[in-house]
Image (cartoon, rainbow, N blue to C red):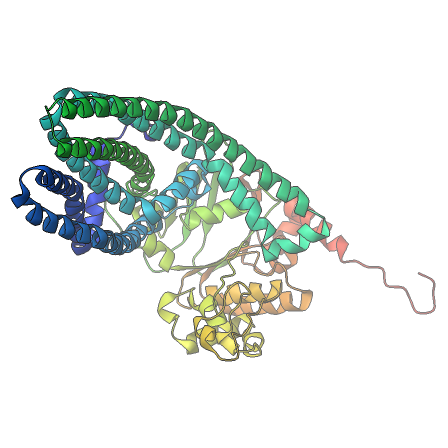
Length: 616
């Protein structure tokens, strides 16, 4: 069990953090809500005393009836108006706190420069709980803390009132409420543990649900008849989660029912004593009225206090996940003495070893490689040889487990990661297709150019996708999605125009345009840039790339060896090591792994064309 699950963190510290967040987000609504809460706490006590004075005046001191009645009427009017004002301020506070909390959370998430945490299931579960907490927990913690304070003030006022009438009954009522408070806090621990336990279950359920509604998955799901299979898995995960929640609900039902009986018994016994005292002349009708109201109010307030305390405790446990994510700090340690990358310079990998974790196999095993400045280098090899991992290390999504990568003699770990990435452009094999407009999809490659249509169009031309985008219903302003409409479309009298979904090859070119938008980058990484293209489009893309990579360092990964044969240097990776390197002709003459792979692929293109007039 982690400190989070076991409550190792100080709840007081987390309460302070939540209140501090609320104060920074919305100080005026917080002050107003606090003032109204204090008023609401005193209102029941004042109403009960006014009622007692009226009843006693009707049977004795009549002079006090009119002022007490006026006070009672004013208190009743205030009781009617107060909830509406509280509701408004609570909603205003909640909106402001949610906005502030989400912004802080994703500021922290954006600070994770590497990929390691996003590939860790435990972190993803914690992030999901943190996202839930950011949406509602800080506001609920504030509401719960003020609710606890309100209930405590109400209880204190009525306890003093009950003590005046019967100290023995007061002690009995309070004694019956203590087990309720303890039980509710214990149950809140169990609720938090259940939420942590079912989080991965519910994440899988969400995954299956998204698959069933995903347009990209729809073809295979329908072709292979996977719908019922995925629905069955989604249902199984929901059944597992429901069973966990059902066990908790049954425990709560048994505990709270037993405690309610204890409280009812204490209240009934106290009422009998109060009525007997009034009949014996030791009390008044107002005393009995005060006792009835006070017992009911104390029990309600104590129950509310216990419930609010338990709920706040549970929310604090959830809020702890939010705080944990925000306090993780950078995943890639910033350099103690930052250095600037030199212009130009070779990139060197020196005895680079890497694996994704201590219990994972080695992906790279002592790679030594020099990528000369201004040259085109191709990485080839079988799947799993380490090509994409090497690219991730160059982009500094991960740190080498041992060894170093240097640019112009400067270790990449000594360079601020944002400075390194500004000098690079890339098309990844698993490139993104954003549900944005065509212009935005390209402009994301260099945010300062997002509003510069000339630069966006120039990049599209270089990638060979300009003609395709111009023919779209709204040209570059066409939404490339059927999930969303343009906001401006929603107000059209004729209804919003549907978005457009590009083909795989068109998306590939658009992703290339996004990378080419950084026309001043020094290193261009192309990970399978022509995957999904037909032969003519592939030829055209590589022709354009040969022109565009002139004068800059380029790293090309491709399984199609015909696309890399004109590279200045071809590096063959095999089992995480550099098996051989050289030019195309040199490697073919050597007869090593590259030559074997090249011959194997070439044989697939040697179709026997029948001679005219002969049988094939």
